Figure (cartoon, rainbow, N blue to C red):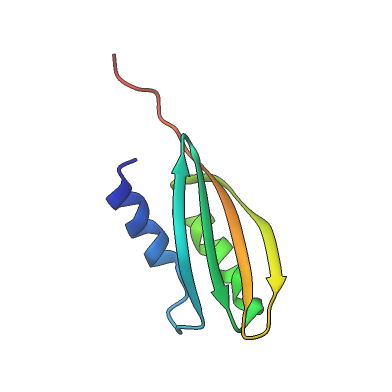
Length: 87
């Protein structure tokens, strides 16, 4: 997957009510780590469901949720669906 396509899917998966924001999206091989903050941790399952429904990830798992003073930090580990390369 190209980085623009990946980022587009991630952005479209973010719930549209502005209650969470992403601080990084990093890809290493077929693993994508998404880090962000929210003042409403109850929306994190919506993000996970939206990412899983996007069709580009095999799995989407919550790695961390850490309550901080102003907001909760979270990180997700996503495994992309890798298609065999044409030879």
